[in-house]
Length: 182
Image 1: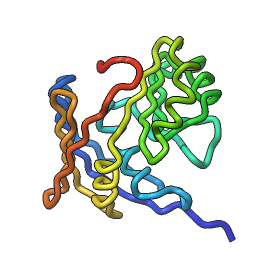
Image 2 (image 1 turned 90 degrees about the horizontal axis):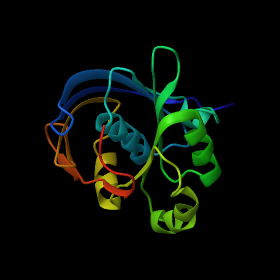
Image 3 (image 1 turned 90 degrees about the vertical axis):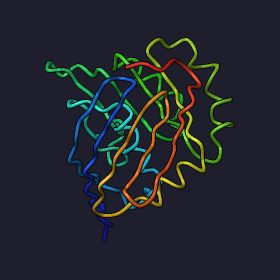
Image 4 (image 1 turned 45 degrees about the horizontal axis):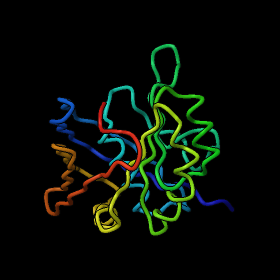
């Protein structure tokens, strides 16, 4: 018998002073049985970092041809494609051909090894940004995971403060490729 996804609900308040974006989102996240709390919370953080009313979670691990998050315009053109983790270089190139902008939010133990292997092959892609998240920060985010969450994310000067009202986590994304921006 196949295992089913676990459903998480998140009320997310985003105050992004860098982009002047302030909004509340009621989100439903499906955590695939093979997904960790850490990966799910990195997806949620990626949503907060690029929050927009048109940004939506993809089917992720369940569907090979969809990103973790994407933002489409009214005609269905993919404006932003966001993947978390350490995606394959061929997958990133394919995404660059399908979307105006591709963002990879990298985290994990072997991130340096992954980046050293793919960086030379990806440097020529316009519209590609790669962010690195600190392992301690993503582990702390995982501890905030609950089936029903109320989180506030404040972003200023490239730093993201995530709190559930009891605990607070500082995440400082570092750009490996590309620059901060919308």
